[in-house]
Image 1 (cartoon, rainbow, N blue to C red):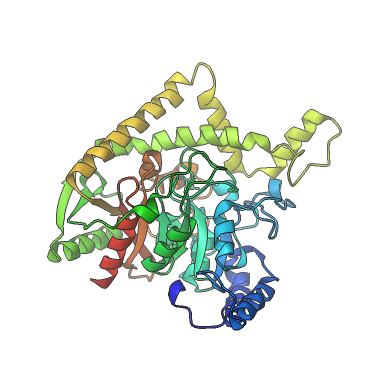
Image 2: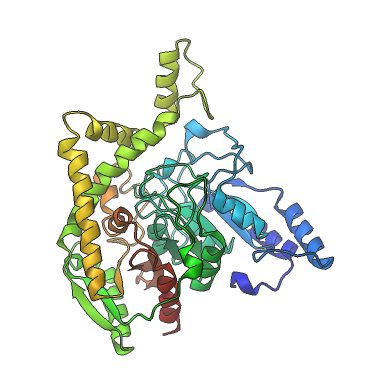
Length: 458
Ligand code: GLN
């Protein structure tokens, strides 16, 4: 069902969403919190409709937020022990805009703690399971949001994408996932991971819903100085005549069924008169290394605010202030959080800054320029989202490098601030979802969404 064409009463929609949430929660572990007040809100919306009062464009539409969006609705934990017990006094701008249009929050979804990960297994509360196979990961870090939409619990869910956290779980669960142009939607009130690549975006069942959600949430916000003036409202979808495929990405390390899905899509585009342009983008192979230097550097800085004094959990075992900090951070962060804090502080430290951080920052510029050149030759680029479909729970969680390699196709565009959209592209023989990724120049979000609609119709 498309958001814009709702026919049911708010109460009926919200009741159905809550029932499905309760039904799936024990097995899939999608939510960190379910909103018991949702029905009251739906009743109020139905009352307004009955009495002819105006309601918003999302009146009564059930939705979920990734549990790293601040709002005084339940605790905001970011799936981290260190934030347990923290109820935010402020509301994220994106959430505020959705609530103002009458959307009804069903719950807060599970993630890798502080969004560090690609499987949702780094959650303090345990992993979310894949919507097609309970023995496999949901993807991450926004795993709960992807599964909430895939299992039809809610019609849309928010996510954050710093290096693929919307696109990869969307592809692992057969739904649409949009990471907009950097700055399109305000980051105010979102738990910061890496401020120079963090983006707010959405999971939906179809591209039309993404369009409406962008209309509602995009725009400049005085509370986020990196937010852009609302280009979305002013932009028009451009016709897509040339689609680029990256030669450097066509290799044996990609799962055969994903390569086949990409080939099939390319053939489908060819017969519908889209020209396919082969691109050489050799700098992209450095993106993953650059990302895993720049992002931890920003993480180390952003996570320094968690000291046991200001928010959430505090270790009670200490009498000395220094111990309080150390014990709180030691007990409150997951190992992956600590790994990134250590890498981040290392690459920023004097003596290593030039060798690592500065080099990565230069590589980032080369990557940005390489994309700019590529978009002189084509309108959009089509790539895999990840090298493999959803993997077995437990198979990579103790091997950080294997987990980081999951992000090889998703992180390059975060470094360049480009929009990316996961579109479902069939299933493996085993019934696992495959997604492909559309990438466009900055501010081409509407063109991406529109092209996804055209692909759906072909
Ligand atoms: N998997 C990537 C990482 O671990 C991306 C995470 C994200 O986008 N939040 O950094």
